[in-house]
Length: 213
Length: 223
Image 1 (cartoon, each protein chain N blue to C red):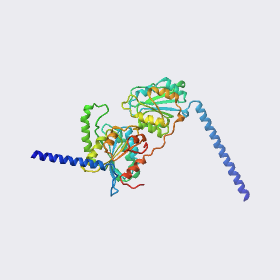
Image 2 (spheres, each protein chain N blue to C red):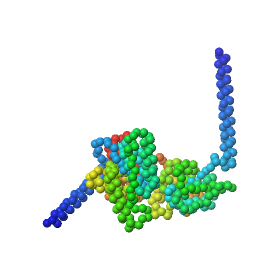
Image 3 (cartoon, rainbow over the protein chains, first blue to last red):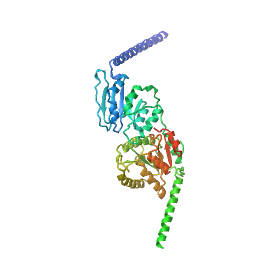
């Protein structure tokens, strides 16, 4: 009886170690595959810069991004793709398939899934609308906000400047965008803390005589 | 003799009106003492883009059965805002799966006082028209509370709500949350409501504004 048990233990150990071996080898193969992928500039290494103007017309930003110098700088910093959302703008930037090591550039006017583009981006360059700004900050993406100087009564710049002062994003203008990208150090950005809309709800409850939760 | 009578009537009515307005202004901002815990009918003003996103962000954390039924009002030329509000309300009825929530939400459109870039001359006429429309809408809806965050569309509605307070049809509390995009200066809507003491509750999201406008409540960033 005792002997049988010993045989059982050894068998289990043997089987278990074979299983571990199998998974170990699988893991090695996976890593090798990934490694090969990076070396060949595969889909796995894509780093996208997403440019958005929201529902506005902001041709000055699209033009600024369409510059060869700026695109070269992005490439130098390791970005592989540039995706531009044109909104209601009329200026059409140049597309590029990204052969011979250049930046892959694409554009579209509107999309129902801007959030998805933001999520898969490594850097977002946005107009100064509060909707776009907070959507990006909540996703935790590095953000450069470009203020539209052509807008009258530019109250949008107040928000961008305040958040830039608190180091949650970088603030720029269409003619200083290239310079900002040249000098940017995204590691100095501080994550935007979670907001607390409940603060107002509590005050409203109290004011209207509702019991506290 | 008749002329004197007329003057006496006019004078006494004006005095009554002024006293009533002063009384309303004095009561504005005082917490409501309500005997019942009944739900408050809420009129929610939606503006374009960022305003709507901020407002829906706030509505989403309010008690659904305390601020109920909810009526969303957007400008006639704004296509997206009511749609986004519908999505939010539909998510509520899906969650609770209770028949009564379906009765709740209403979605309405109001004429704008002034479109972007409109000439100031024609704006006078459109503002008067928008004001009349706001009076009509506020009368139909007769909310207990008006919630807004600064688009131009909210001024005619807030003025209408104030007039209803004065006339005594219904006490409509006005809750104003200044947009997060306003860091150092109030928006025009905010300024009007603040200076004329029309809002019962006035919230700002940045400390700089609280320093400049001491009667405002600082609540931090809501986004």
